[in-house]
Length: 521
Image (tube, rainbow, N blue to C red):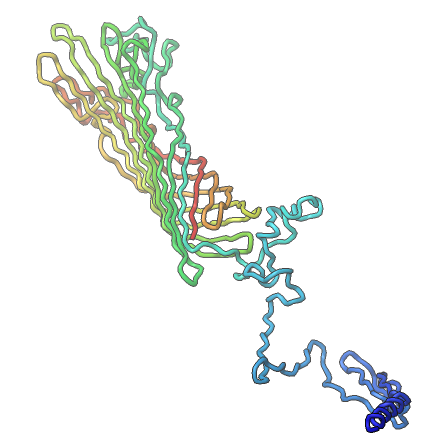
């Protein structure tokens, strides 16, 4: 009976609830209220809303209106409940220049994406602005679409703190300006030692004379060499130090004439008294037998110490300035040697050896300034450039020495400290100091193997002003009174005093190719 009564009460309550009418809440703007409550609507004044039931009879009431905002202001947000203890969680402040969620590119934000900078490593760096235009639509990833340039330090490509490089040089030095040193005439050409006006053998300007050695007879001045560079950046700064050293291997050339293989061989001279062309005999059958050898050498090296400063940089390029000290040394020499056998009636064959040596040394020391830069053109390819100039002192040394040994067959040999073109009037060490400047430019095109190693090939051009070279110091004009003979060392104060110390200077271009490798850390 109790269960029947309980079930009946449940059914009655259900029927009563079904007959009740649901009340609906509708939202409408405050404009539905009486006209007296209307307010002007603007961006700075929010529109208040009212909540009312469909059958409500009383006047609608407006919801609370928030604070009025001025243009450019952001609403103050209530603190968000924290994960522990209901404390508000700290919200990071907005930093100008940092990417917001609305501007961030897909994927995680890395150091390469800061402010307006793009990731040049992914999009590619363009070489010239023209390649960024729609005229090249087929290679968007190769040339990129962005400048990839920003002078903000945070946008710069990360660079190594320490670097070391070694490169192979193939540089060319111009040949020396050497006067004619050895001449030849056909066998049987008239030789008149008593009257030089009748002499037809080996005299320059005659149709029977040919030049065996002069400037045009030199071999190519290509030199192999090496260059080594080391540098590092100071911690937490834009300054660094670097040292650069290069050296060209010594180049030696030798040329020998005589022994009947080149006709009648002579050394061409100019008589200081008459001013006429004359000769000294080297190999003329029946008069003298012998050889003449011309040896030349050239070597060059340099070192520089620079302070380096970061000037500008971006994600695809950097530009540094350098200031420091530079030294360059250029050593050269020419030696003319004779080994003669002179038949003398009643005496026999007299051995005579002659040596004339002309050596020069140029030592430059000066202050250097310049620029060094690099531009990435593809993901791993780059172009590098160097432009620098040094100004300072060029210390010039001209060293002229000579010797002659005369050995008769039945007497003691006599030695003298002069030769033919190295005579009393010009032998010795002569020095000058002159102002000089040394500019250098270099270009290289390379490839980054990985983050540590890179390789390149390039071109260098180096200019030296006011240098002395051996060939320019040879004076062919000779006062024969200075030449020693048996029992006669030669006149030490002969007039005119020729050959003379010429001290001629010229400018020098050194240029060539290089290939190298660099390690960065």
